[in-house]
Amino acid sequence: MSRVGRISAEARAAWYAFVRRRTAVFFTFFFPVIIVSIFGVLVQTDPAGGGLFAEPPGYYIAGYIAVVVLFTPLSRVGSEVARHREGNRFEKLATTPLSRAEWLFAQTLVNVAVIGLASLLILALVVVATDAAFVASPLIVPYVAFGVALFCGFGALLGRLADSQDGVIAASNGVAIPLLFLSETFVTPDLLPAWFLPLVNVSPLTYFARGLRAATYGPTNAASAGRVGLVGTDPYLNLALLVALATVFFVAGAYALPRTD
Amino acid sequence: MVVNAENVSRRYGETVALSDVSFSVPEGEIFAIIGPNGAGKTTLIRALTGTTDAEGDVSVFGRPPRAVARRRLGLLPQEFTPADRLTARELVTYYAGLYDETRDPDAVIEDVGLTDSAGTFYEDLSGGQKRRACVGTALVNEPDLLILDEPTTGIDPTGRRELWRLIEGLSDDGTTVLLTTHYMDEAETLADRVGLLADGKLVALGSPEELIARHGGESRLVIEVDDEGRAETAIAAAGYERLPGERGVAVPAGPKEIPPIVEALEADGVDYEGLVWRQPSLEDVYVTLTGSDVPTAEGAT
Image 1 (cartoon, each protein chain N blue to C red):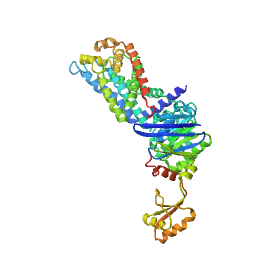
Image 2 (image 1 turned 30 degrees about the horizontal axis):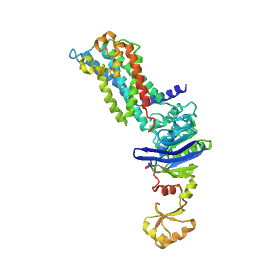
Image 3 (image 1 turned 120 degrees about the vertical axis):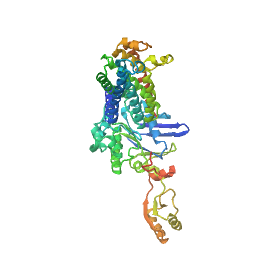
Image 4 (image 1 turned 60 degrees about the horizontal axis):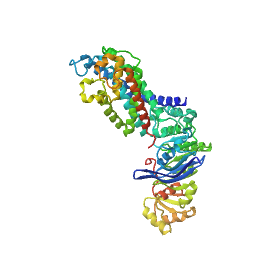
């Protein structure tokens, strides 16, 4: 019970800290709107009959959600770690019963809630703005939750390594942008050189996008559009791998949180 | 002993932050650590809370710092900046939520004098109010050992005195208090014992009275004057020698020696602006042992 109380207290404080920053709230939800608007329009125009954005609209739903699952936790948790470090908050927390894992779990819960809302917004926009074929699979929920957990752990690692909030933002952009475009989100594998394809399978975001696409767009279509990779296109196997990766990143991120100077 | 430190040392590369610091703090005592900026005060606090890896032996309640039951500790770090979009009440309530048993956050808010500002966001509080809210976060779990790293920095004189009364009250109730301060009057008023750190070494340890008797020197008359050279010449002619390290022209003097000094100044036509007679204080101990001026609030870190 006390652990639940500690996590609740931390999550409540983190939630207030987020929702009271109007700029952060606005851009957190404006970001997916922009993404869907731009890519949705591009996808619908299908400019060259091939190449970029030439797949059917439903193909890109996993990519849209991947954008917020990747960027927001990575930068938010990384920045929060930097803020905590700069304000000597970890020094104080080290003398309270709140453990590092509990702190990161509370931050993850807040991010799951925020990204969950952003994902709902994306799905609503996709339905309204495009003619995407879309399966409302319940697997979306665990995919978003564990995807967020993974990148919260990653964000904690960046927060540990970067020495300031500016450093975290720069590092998270440096990590997120290549990951986003090289993880079967918007760029299909057939557009990449053959030698690069093994690297796609190294990206944890690949399993998020590949599995979520299989769940929301259909395994057959996903299989024809994407590479088979380590665990094929089965949404459950990809989810299992995502859970394993999320666990690894979460544990590493919690361990990396500063405890001493 | 609540706190026991033996030969505690800490280096950051070539820089020696702490060097063989040893002291202990019994239950219920208010122990103040004073020293110039960079003397190692905050590093010592971190060694005692286990938030830095120091050499030597540190025990708190008989255990290594990181093994101490967290509910027994209350810490206010130096330059602590909590979430700025929480109100003062929410901030204290948040820290209360990290413990199983705590005081009523509103009672803590009242204790630190923030009842009227309890609903104000931290970022909108004044500097002194912010520090008081932070002190509140260290009190909310009713700690047995309260560690305060410069608790009254930025707080106005009235607020400081209110916090002193609060800290004294906690001590009277059995709470052990370990604090750092750059206000000598704070250490002299509050502390049962004082440790003076300089260049990472504990150069003096004892009650304020003991330290003053040992290192404070004599009582003195301070002459506030524009032309210090002329005043120095006048008092030298009367057989008095100027004390170094004082603002103004200071002369070792008891109360009975004030009239002859004044006569010497007036006989020489020295136009002084004021005369202040005072007994030695902890500030004199500080200046004598560290060779530096007492830091101002603005210049302190």
